[in-house]
Image 1 (cartoon, rainbow over the protein chains, first blue to last red):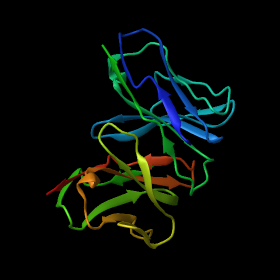
Image 2: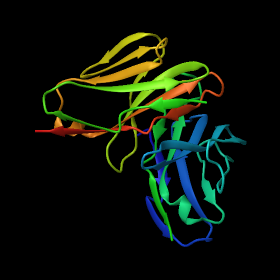
Image 3: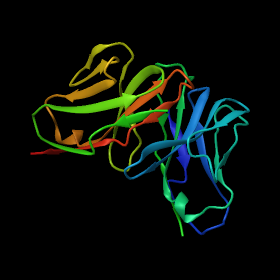
Image 4: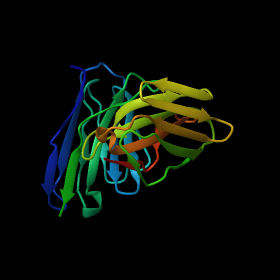
Length: 114
Length: 110
């Protein structure tokens, strides 16, 4: 089954404790991205990757890092989480960044930073 | 940059028709998407428009007017399971990334 898999689904952590949210897709997609979703603000892009070893900042990259060492995986790293990073996070992938390719989303990770 | 505006909430009756509007401003339009998102779940793709006009797909249709910076999603024969948020997203030529509106939460009542 074609899918985007994120882990964990839920996470509660403390301020300053490094964490990684994993994302993996099995569709051989070139393009992957991370979004955060907050009430009233919609989905905002954090980082994206056009292919292996190619990553770039989205609209809200501060406080986040990513890596793309393999085509299928695109982990999101919070080196020192803060309460304002409490949010619902989605990983997405698409075949490439051409205009008519739809994005497939993971099931989301609800992160709470206390 | 882009501004994408949608109504925050809408309510409709089971069996009825509802139209969800989306207006956008972009420096170089390159496609518009509609996604459905049930509470706590991932967004799922509904439709794509890049040329003016209506795209029909079963009970759902999406319309685009590029000159007006306007799209709508039309849902016919509403069912209770259509209660969800509907997200409008626009791509532009500059970086080809999708930008999302805040979403419209639709409640379907019996």
